[in-house]
Length: 394
Image 1 (spheres, one colour):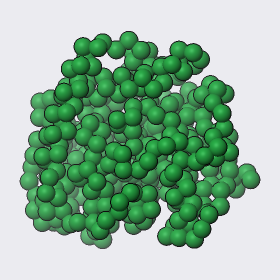
Image 2 (image 1 turned 90 degrees about the horizontal axis):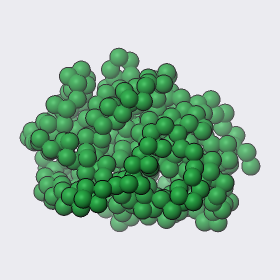
Image 3 (image 1 turned 90 degrees about the vertical axis):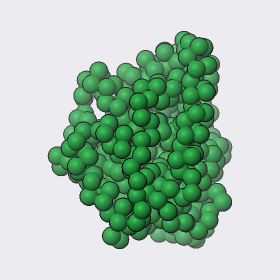
């Protein structure tokens, strides 16, 4: 059946304009959702943001497990949403399919690669939407579009039936406009769900706040203050210190190595016409320096050890989600690249460590949303979702 939603935002893909009824009643009955077009849905093509991918891959016969879980919990699926090509961008501007409207900041990019899911949620076309996050593709659009978005613990939600980008970083995430719904969806999607624990200490990422403009820090400070009051115990810490460039570069190197490992054979055979940015990143990934890769791997392990120690004993880390508000549409590529690098300095921490991070709509700046993030130890996704609910009551 054709999708009944009037897509005024350009959020949904044409080949995924479908409606799938829930398979049973459950906790999500009466709600509808959208699925990012890197996830398979039985009987519906997956394009992963690229027309040549669409043309060279068979229609899936099975759905990604997350879709089945949500349908089984009573939610209705109302379409598949736009993504940047093979999910390798943070902008949301697709050279083949266009740019979804950012409902919270028209004239500005929605953020990628989960652009359609973020736009559909922010614009009220759906109650919630599924995205994926490798380098920030849920967290950054959540900040740009003024909604909640979570990057889950790596490996906690099955990624069968998902187009991979960098498997040791790829996770499923979701967007919603309220923390209560974020938690409700989490109770359906997360494996091994347990009762949430209250954080014992709030860690304020001093160096990461120092990395963003003072206007961003000032805008976020009232939300930080509310968090401190809610938790009751806080401490300023340096997360990365003087190694911001090294952590960002290690992410670039390892993501590129994995991206070419999983997609290089197809790219070599098909020679797809990628758009700006994606084209250059895959070209660079094809000729990675083995010495760079060898140096990045032990650095990542040291990062994992550092973050695990920092987040032990039910601590929660607080950091800015993004270096600023959403850039304007059609911002020159060179300017976006600089902004992207600054964003990755903030976003790569959870990616390297495999930890969950939740971006919350905390403030506005120049009339545009800006998000505040909370991060917890691995498998503590419930604690973040519950804390967001509590903060929403303050």
